[in-house]
Length: 407
Image (cartoon, rainbow, N blue to C red):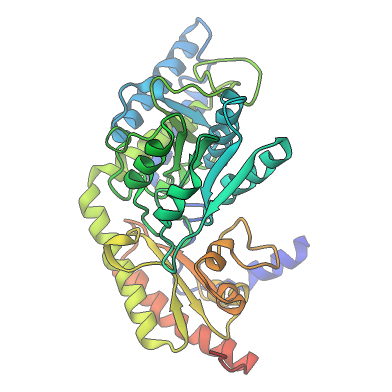
């Protein structure tokens, strides 16, 4: 296996240019974020933040300052509403499991959409083993939740509703405020959670205006370090811990806090919001250039998700008929363009993305999908290079398969 990987890496030698667009699955860390983190590994604040000595007090100060920064970007009432976790997956698990533990005996229904991330879907499905039922609300061909079906789904038994603000695969910006109001109107006691990992730092997202109970955010999706995320828990909303152990500054997540990653998350947040409108306009321009030129120059392609302002500014997801997605990612990689086929959660399984199936894509359309996400660091030249390489890669793979399109 290692030898095979080495051969693949050797095949990449001498690349003319490299363009990394796989932000959905992992990200590079900008120099400013790395420099902010480095002192906290071995120079200062390397102590346990619960202990009464200088390195401990420094760690406590760094964590509280970071929480305050992130709380301000979310428009929280106070920094105690920000609860650090090791990432988006853990925050979603905490939201769902912590809510159902707290609400036990008060209802047995969980309502989610058909296109939630697997860290929501799989937890909800696991809870059926413990007597809970799930309703998966359908979406339309662009990925928007059917609000009438949502209204029908919520009742006196519903303890939790979870809907992502922005879909991680196809970039659909959901009407979260409206969805939350429907849920609360039907059952005020229902806890409303949103995975906002693909919204935070990219589109306006204000927890006080939306009035959600819980919200997940992720560090690496705003080009921060991997291994850190957070769950916003509205003041007055109670959920239970899902792990036990030494309790430090994070009452909902035991263990010694990872101070360098928390500092990196806060610094990445500062950079994401520093030129928020300018960054958003830049990403939308690059996104629209990719979508426009790909759909105009390559036949038999399908844009997955909506267009324009209803789509996340960074998201491009396109299906290439008569191309297998994994083969296309390899072909592009050999030319220095790094993308993903579907989401990282499902790419190693021989099954189509549940998101693309939910919006009505056929098996071959789903398996030929490519996901790209642009950032504020990408340039017009980067996108021009992608548009130079991609058509050639598609043409080569279609030439190998020799398949025809079946409408």
